Length: 68
Image 1 (cartoon, rainbow, N blue to C red):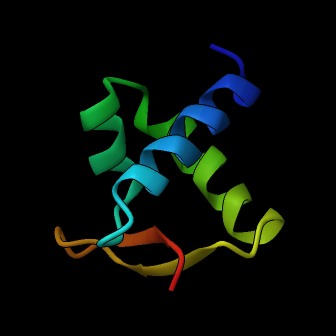
Image 2 (image 1 turned 30 degrees about the horizontal axis):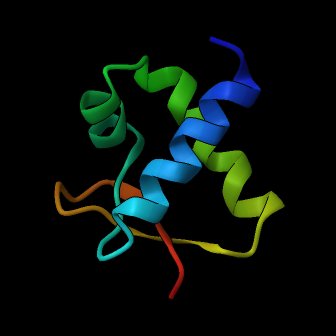
């Protein structure tokens, strides 16, 4: 899967689950994707788009949330 497709998949998933933040490992588990790739994609989202905010996931790791 390309970075663009993965980014699109992650953005959609975070928008659909915007009630709380998620870390790359938790998103990867839900989407059945590689956590290392999702970590790269998610870190770019925070800097490229102002719709995603860094917060802590329920598992305690640093995660991201769509919206405020």
